[in-house]
Every structure is written in structure tokens, then in C-alpha cells.
Amino acid sequence: MLNPLHLRTLTAVLQTGSFAVAARRLGYTPSAVSQQIAALERAAGLPLFEREAHGIRPTPAAAWLRGRGQEVLAALGALQDDLRGLADGATGTVRLGSFPTASEHLLPSALAALAAGSPSVEVLLDEGEPGELVPRVHDGDLDVALVYRYTRVPVRRPRALALTPLLREDLVLLLPPGHRSAGEEEVRLGDLADAPWITTRQGTAGATCLQRVCAEAGFEPRVGYRSNDYDVLRGFVRAGLGVALVPVLGSVPDPGVATARLAGVDVHRHVGVLTRPGLGNPAVAGVVAALTAAAADRHDPERGVCREPALPATPPRFSPGPGRSR
Image (cartoon, rainbow, N blue to C red; front, side, top):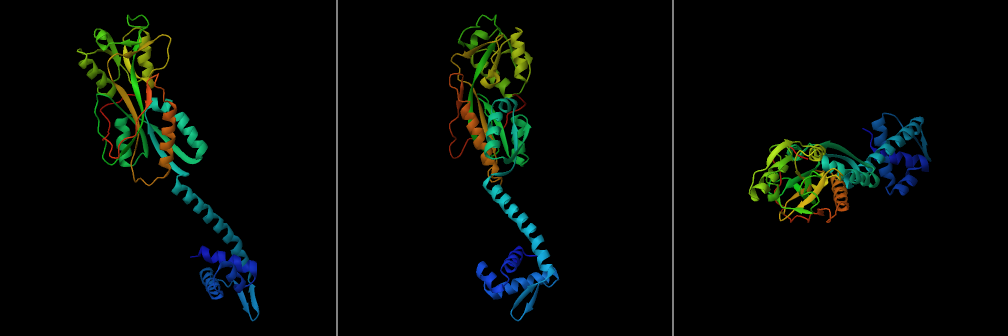
């Protein structure tokens, strides 16, 4: 096996024409240089120098090996640079999971900033809901996942995973323009006890949250339609088929839909980044930083989107609730 160190020594000897001068340049003794060249000759199976009384004469094999060796040394140098980049997070691949509203509102700016600052980091995106993404982070199939939880719907995460909080979103009411409460800034939930509701699928965190806040207001919501697509929910509200309660990021301005805040109800959706510490992928830190910066840009207290405070050193456990929702 050829030793890269010996190839570098060969280059120095050919450049200087002397073992002794090459030794001074490299910081070796002449004996060490002679031993390295001898080892290289044994590995190559060819003589590289003719030893004469007053010096050395390179053989054609030495010149050929030097040329090919330079290619090898250049490739090794590039490999070392890549390894340094991998170690400091400037190079690598990150497998990222995200749910649809986060993909729409957080990922464009986060991934654009990451591409500008770390162009050698590749991000592979896969969408899903927390119930699908959390096990994949735990099993190592994903490096990072954007996840959420709702107020009133306690959840737990595997102890091995870490959560970085990003955003806290208010939940807003969507009302048909002709609804008696349309135009009001705040609406009491009890005033909607007789309204038909449009919400996410049975068992999702959003639907469960709706059931629980309505129960606190003294009624069971009468759900007429369900969809995990907020565009569909908004379209049904626009058509006068009912009212809905959605996170701010899922509420797109629509002239055919009125919005209002819930009066006297403290309820939110919390968005965070889930990772597995000790994964051994330094590029993950850059992705988390880009997502954190993107979330900071969405900070809008007037609209109801706020940055979450950092978790304590031992964060509460977090894992998905049942079902799917956006």
C-alpha cells in the first residue's frame, strides 16, 4: 500500500535533487528520507532512484509516480477539506420532516438562508404529521422534524429526543360573512353553541382541542364536515356551511371569510423543532438555527404569532397525539 507521506517525500526529493536538502525542507533527517524512499520503492516494486557516489539520479518510474501521486494527494486534500466541512456542519445532508403549514410559512425563508450560508448542505424534505415524524426522528430515519402540539391536548415525546420551541400561534375563528358575529373582533365560544362546526379529522389534535374548549364553554360542538386541509375548511366556511377554529398560520386572508379572536379562552398551537442529540450530524445545528431565525421573522404579536421562550435544561416530554392534522 502506497503511503501518502512517502509520496510527498518523493516530490520533495525530485524538486531538490537531494535526500539531504529534501530532509531539511521537510524537517526530517536524511536517514528518515532515505528510509521513506526505500519503503516507497518496496511498495511500488520498482527502483525510483539510482544511488551514485556523489548523488542520486531519478528513474523514469519516479517521474511517473510523482505525476500520478500529485493527483492522489490532491484528492486526499479535497477529502480532508470535505471532512473538515462535515465536522463543522458546512457540508452534509440533513433529512428534514415537516407538516404542511410549517412547510408553507417557515421553510421557504429558512432553506433559502441555509442555501446562501451553507451551500454544501443538502436538505432532503419529507412531509408528514407529528404522529408520523416523531418515530422517524427517534429511529434515525429523519435528522430534524417540525412538529406541533395544541393547548388542552397534552402530549409526550420519547426521552431521547430534544425539542427547540419556535412559535406559539393563537387559534382564530373563521366565520361566514353573513354570520351574526361576523365583524366582531372577539366572540365568546358559548355564542357559537348552536353553530355547525368544520374541523379536522376525528382524533387529530386540532379536533380534540376544539372538543375540549367547547366542553369548557358548556357544549358539544356539532361537527358537520371534516378535512385536514385548511383551504378546504376555509372554502366550506366561505360557502356558509359552518364555523371553524384554526391556527393563525392556517388562516389566509379571504374576503369571503370573517375572522375573530376567542374571548376569554387561552388556547394556542405550539410549533417546535425535534432532534435527536448525539446523532453525529453537525449540519443539523445549522438547519435548526435557520428554522429558528425564520420563526423569529414570523413573530407578529398583533396577528397572534409569538416566539416561544426557550425550554429549561430538562424540557417537558413531547410526542405526537393521535391522527393527522395540519
